[in-house]
Length: 226
Ligand SMILES: C[S@@+](CC[C@H](N)C(=O)[O-])C[C@H]1O[C@@H](n2cnc3c(N)ncnc32)[C@H](O)[C@@H]1O
Image (cartoon, rainbow, N blue to C red; front, side, top):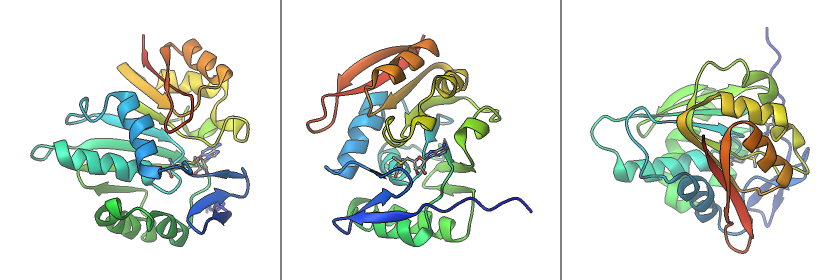
């Protein structure tokens, strides 16, 4: 039998924001979770305008699922007919469903979508469909699982913990794999503007731009595969 993944061990800030003990870092912005996600991962990619049937988003770090739910909310507003997106997310330390639910309870805007997400999580499903998005969660250290992935994404959400605390999620080789698993014209976005991450993404073939960060954070990064 394969080893079960190690569940994330947490503490809570203000009883609302989960903080990973292993990385000593919060899962989402202390200032305005959903709006921060919209700023970095939707606007940073030119979404929802680019969304179309078959568009594939991939994410480094599934965490609470908040990025997925924020995307699903936007997709519900622009989706036509039976169109579907694909969402592949990579996670080494899955959160316990009770912890996910506790974190998501602070976002009433996504309440209607977090119910079905939690049902899939409690059933231990790694593949499920949520509001017109075919989701796959790939468990394991992304430095092993991404090179083995056969897919290519149109948009990458790079959402590891901060590069200083979670360097495994931002290394040169891994950013090279991100480039390698990006479709023609595809893009990346991330909240960080750390120089070594930007250089690694440029080395992976992206035209890297520095953009204004969310709410007081000076910069974020985004770019298109050149
Ligand atoms: C900032 S959190 C992601 C937040 C998430 N996108 C959300 O919407 O809640 C970073 C995530 O990366 C995961 N992670 C850290 N190192 C990893 C690794 N080497 N491989 C895969 N996942 C990793 C952590 O367990 C954590 O869930």
